[in-house]
Length: 456
Ligand SMILES: Cc1cc2nc3c(=O)[nH]c(=O)nc-3n(C[C@H](O)[C@H](O)[C@H](O)COP(=O)(O)OP(=O)(O)OC[C@H]3O[C@@H](n4cnc5c(N)ncnc54)[C@H](O)[C@@H]3O)c2cc1C
Image (cartoon, rainbow, N blue to C red; front, side, top):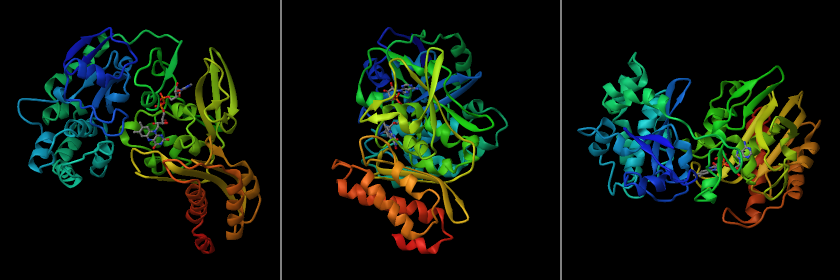
């Protein structure tokens, strides 16, 4: 298979299921650093460029979770590919503020910031979001933040330009001139031939943490499974839609405050990769998207060849990592009813970005003259599967909202769950945490009922 590495076409017969990081280090590209090898630290960050509707789109992504087969026919950029005769403005900002010390994390950070310049709306407040997936262990974040502040003039200049983004960034010395030829070169490169037997790979952010190499990857990115769309009654989310696209979807934000809620999920580079299909099929008891969509009473479509079946998401999970998924079936889409409901999502994690939850929970309901209608409550981290809390949801239905009712609901939840002691906390801690999250849902959703404040 072929791809462009910086400004050179590379052809390789290496297995398609190995991490790109390992390949790059093997061929002597040492600007990508190996550290956690689990997508956590950002030291191995690269830019991956692909043609979407004839437009070249780049995303910063961790090369340790990026299988080699996913870069076929694409443009891979490492720090070596950003170097010019002198330092570019991003690199210079780090020198000027002492934003680098041992230097191990610096290439990854420069790559992430370059991704911000290429790919974002250039809101100055978002520049730190671009580096939320990069960990530094010696310089200290203060000087790194100062380096990003030095870039504000460059952001303004790029934002004001009437030219397309890539030529503008070449003019601003942020990208080397060879970037202007990449689009044409990519049109000539072939993708990996499609095949359909083996392990389905979506974003790979769970798979490549669990397995360092896959023998038989089937890249679902080759299938038409992403996007958010709607009909009269439902909003659909394609299984290959990544978390950041879900978070920023206009369609979903018209009925939910999903942009704010999903900013609690991992870091930007992971959100740009991690798909909803992967989150659901991975069946982690604390998968954030799964918990989110369980409380929306979502349905899913499971497809094999040209037949599909639709089931409730809550019926998909049968036991720890046991699913109602037949051999070869693909999760095709997730759908929710197209209606406005009151919705709350809470997540407690040791670190907000780049970490999964200790306990998370979501609640949707309608309020009809103080009466709760159609409540759906879910929670993660408190049992072997992502849990739809059926008994609590039924208990709340058609009852008048009050603090006694909510206390009663939390007691029912306590009987429905079966948390265990693990690295994320003791079983007792998780029980108490979920009770507080349930209280938090109601207190935040109903500020007009001050008596609920007394719950905490
Ligand atoms: C650093 C880091 C931080 C993270 N933080 C969070 C977090 O905050 N919250 C959270 O919930 N998760 C988090 N995760 C976990 C992970 O990102 C999510 O679970 C993600 O949604 C998985 O999606 P994916 O596309 O990467 O799945 P993959 O790893 O590609 O696949 C996961 C599983 O699903 C199967 N699969 C994928 N798509 C389909 C499909 N359409 N049909 C059938 N089978 C399919 C695969 O074969 C595999 O078994 C984090 C991971 C990392 C590495």
